Image (cartoon, rainbow, N blue to C red; front, side):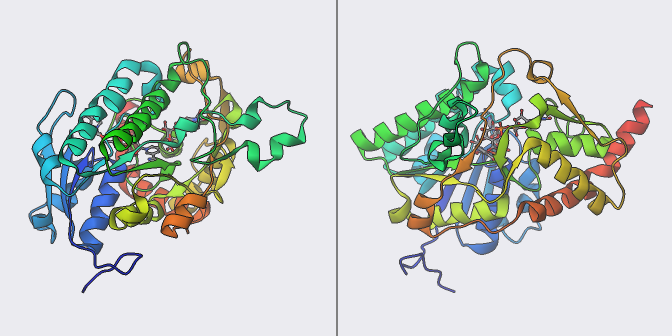
Length: 381
Ligand code: NAD
Ligand code: UGA
């Protein structure tokens, strides 16, 4: 059946190169491309665990998706595929604050230096690029610097994050390595913008705001090492019956967006180039704002519902950022996306409430991880 875009134009099947397409967002995007479109996906990543179900010989989409296992750093194997594709989507990144803090060199290399190659190949071949940046480029809000007793702090003008108006405010970037990633992505955005201004690169930049769903990050000591982002940290504490650690008391605010809603926005960008080119889009759910402490409480309640029992010992405990992340950690105080541009250009709005997205995601986590974590805990004892 013929599919049409927002302007009623027929959607022609594209060949799409996905750099870093084997991760959390990449896996959901590939699923969407396979199930709902006729586009072809060429995926580059250093692992395929999250898309193996699409690559399997029995998969109905096997002839529309290919996977190439490569380390993108210092590798030009993706030059020819980028130049032969219609569109490249760059999802490759190190995206855990623990790594920004402890591996700032790798963070800058992966998120900036490696990404330069991708931009260069797109510019040289006059191919379109969708680059994944981050809401973290906004850093801290203006309101966080205003005196605590002023009503101005409550005025959205000082905290709502707008692509074309908000300043990007980081802490001291030399001592606070937390900002290595935000600096790298901000520079990347400037470089992409300059490529458009000087060489006519067709680009779209996406700034995701805390997308959550099945297959996010990893469960430490089961299928990964290190410290994942907050959802998987809390999920792991719940599955292990440990206390949920609230960094600095869990006062920071985040807005969480369900991955499947967000993927709808990305598909609109792919299929509506005239509306998406030259734009930077916030993609998040401003209605799902909570403090990290409230997130911990909600996840504890939802876990009890999906597991049919309360997590043993699942209370919260306050920890300092120095204990959790070491010296040099800093934090965004509040991340609420302004939705004017995406709603005007693409008519997109998120649908899923925080309660619903936590139920879906924690059910998935419980089904997939509770047995392996129980087994790992028995082996330790
Ligand atoms: P992810 O970690 O699941 O995906 C990144 C992928 O890049 C991984 O599969 C990883 O293996 C791959 N990769 C990294 N370095 C590589 C290398 N040197 N060689 C080969 N592969 C490499 O993270 P994600 O949540 O899917 O994020 C995708 C993009 O979106 C990233 O650019 C991230 O910064 C951005 N982003 C995501 C969120 C979110 O809410 N999930 C928020 C802000 C920004
Ligand atoms: C991370 C990425 O680094 C950003 O680039 C990305 O934009 C963002 O996720 C996202 O998903 O949109 P951040 O939200 O700060 O940024 O990272 P998390 O590790 O998920 O932390 C969220 C908050 O929870 C922080 O205040 C952190 O201190 C806190 N936290 C984290 C805890 O209180 N306890 C934990 O165990 C882990």
